[in-house]
Amino acid sequence: MGALVSRARQRAAQAAEQVVVQGQQYLTFTVTGELFGIAIASIKEIIEYRAPTDVPMMPGYMRGIINLRGRVVPVIDLAVRFGRARTEETRRTCIVILEVEQQGEQHDIGVVVDAVSAVLEIADADIEPAPSFGAKLRTDFINGMGKLGEKFVILLDIGKVLSVEELSLLAAAGEGPAALPGAQSARLEAPSAQGARLAAPGTGGTVAP
Image (cartoon, rainbow, N blue to C red; front, side, top):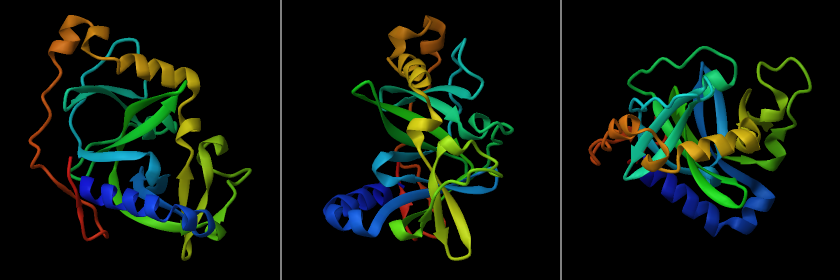
């Protein structure tokens, strides 16, 4: 799936001036049966789900940390963050690695999603404001509602989904094994085989870890 995201980001960079007029590309995915999207510029890669290592004294929505090619990455469960039941892992469950800025520094954070759908370009004219009431999600989490024919995709503002304080907490968890108890860091699993690949339904391509 990495190749799909990389190509999408390259196309987005090459067409930067057009994007301002036409819209943006979004990675779409499902969480508890609903379709969400995050701007492709924030997506670093998509990996197969692996069980994170628990970290004590973390919020309930934090699954733990994973070792991603030598980097410690905190992982959160978006469903729990949205006030819903914990995500049940299936064959299509993925971890989307996001690049998030916090106090001028870039941090990698993984989010657990039910399944990745596709990379879509959504024109600015097809994005409606977040609903002021009746939504199943806090409206400050929502950048807008992207129209896909007769349906909508909820476009997330990842900076609002995680507050500054929460980002600081997650960044501390991701500082490295030295920041964790010895027993915790010792249990960090090595990354899964680099050959593992996931198919993104409806994209015709794959994204590699």
